[in-house]
Image (cartoon, rainbow, N blue to C red):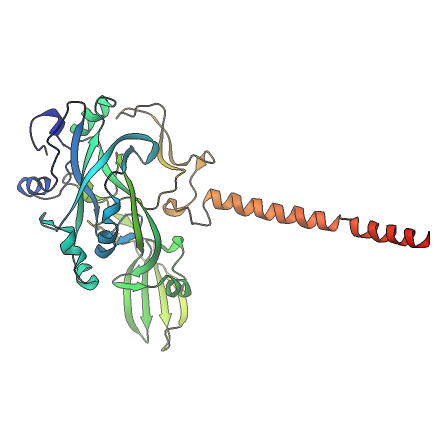
Length: 356
C-alpha cells in the first residue's frame, strides 16, 4: 500500500492486515515529515503486537506501553545484522485492533489490568537511505522485504494458557527452561485442570533496540494478507499439583500433533549480538543473493545451538565455551596446587638454617 505517488512516500512495506480501507486508515496514523528529499525513502508498518510470538515470547500491552519511549531513533538493519545499517526509525504510535490511533498518555493512565486486556499494535515510521541503498529501496517498494522488531528484556515470567507463573514457580514445575518453550503443558490439581496451552515467556522490562528488514518474518502482521504457518507439537507436559500447590509429578504425554495458528505472533526477541539468521555470499543483499549459512553464530563461525537464540541458554556456544574454559582453568589451578613444592622447600630451608 502506498500513501502518495512521489517516490519518497511510497511505502509498499505497509503491513496491516484487513481491507484496503483499514490499511489506509492505519497508514494515516504515522505522519511523514514535510521536508522530504529525493535521497530518502519513507515507510511505515507494524513493529510489534501484543500477544505471543513464534519464539514463544509473550508481550503484555502494559509492557509495550512501558517500553514505548525506547523505539524512536533506533537503527534499521538487514536481517538483524548490526553492522548493516540502512536507515532508522523516526516515529511510532499505538493503534487498536481496528487501526484507531490511541495516544500514549491515555494508555499510560490506564490500570495495568485494564490495559493488558487490550489488543494493541505499535506502528512505526521509518527511513531508508535510498541514495546509499537504491536497490534495497526499490525492493522495499516492491514488497520484497518485511519488518522484524528487536528488543532486550530485563526479566520474564512464564505463561501456560491463560495462567501466568513467576519464574520461580515455573522453575519448581520444571517448565522455566528454554527447552520447554513452545511445548503444550497442562497443570492439574486434584483432578481439575488449572491451565492448558503452550509454554511462553512473558517478557518484562522491554528496551527496544531497533528493527530489521527481513525476508521471512514470524509476525503475521508484518506480512501482506498472510498468516503464520501451522506447526506441529510432539506432546504435552503434564504437571500435577497437591493441595499445597507443590508438584506431585511432571510427565511428558505423547499425543498426536496439534496444528496451531496464532495471528498475534511476531519476531525474535533478545537476539544474541553474535547471531545472524542468514549469512550472505555478498553485499548488498538482493533477492537472488546466495545464502551461505542460516541460524549462524558469527563469534564461533558455527551453527547456533541455542533454542530461540537466547544468550542466557546453557546450550549457547558462548556459554559452553565459558563453562569449558572455567572447568579447564579450575583443573589447571588444582594441578598447580598439587605440584606446588614451595611450602615443603621452605620448611626444609628453615630446618637447615636452624641446624647451622
